[in-house]
Length: 367
Image (cartoon, rainbow, N blue to C red; front, side, top):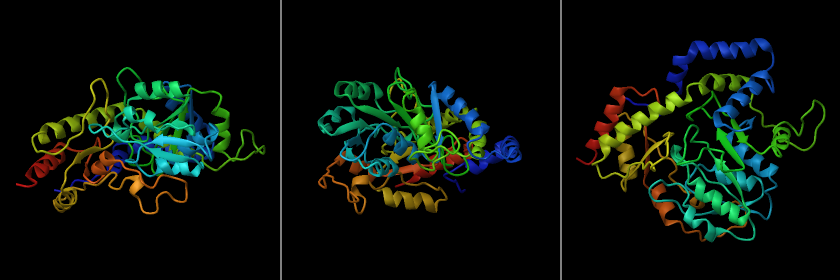
């Protein structure tokens, strides 16, 4: 049996009639950029997050970068985040001209360890960027308290966790802004790349809308900005899919329960869901000391398992890309986790036979 890693083609086939109709409506309208379909989706997305504003842009990376610019984060500033995430989190800090400062992770969730943040704060620190890794929210209650004590901004990297909730808090409730990615493989993904910023801060909304559109809020009137717009065709696709995100996340959680029950006595490190949290399992990540051998074994068995993120950002070749940084960064928990991670297939269209095959194949490892 072959088990793929991504399910977006199956997802398209399941919704083909509705998605095709939504895209055709945009095509027939002739309004492909900054049109009414984007405006409608932004309202729907803000309502989903229970926030006042949503600003579509062309990627999750740009969402982070544009927020940094709108909030005045730039050269000479430091931004606290983690190194066990996709490169774009730190990349956006560097693009803004600031310096990422990496702190250690929790050993069970692999999210930022809030107890390590204050030791990393200096007089140059402007913001904390927690990454909601794999689909589980970081400890935003503790992070918000630290930010308040030190007068820091908080920007949530929510590229992997749309639909997740915390213990007594929601995404966007305890931060200045939330940055989302809609690249195809995300829980909510389009046919390409796009992203969004959601926020309750009305004071930065006009700046963000101008920054993503060549500095313009009115035709032919420009200041300094960029070309980072979410096109209406993508918005149409996302609008169709947004209505199903909770249902799809429920299915991911069902698959995660099956994986966990089936693999609980294998000696592998399995995902940990914190009590009171709703993990939406963008990725189901296991850890093993024999990562490379096990990955080869799974791939040969027809299971398209992958690694996320096998090289921590501070261990990437060329770090820190010309920016001033401490080259002696030591993050043993981050480094150990990065060297051990394997992501098993996880998407709501997985069939029961495929889930069972993955479990049986992983259980057979080492026997």
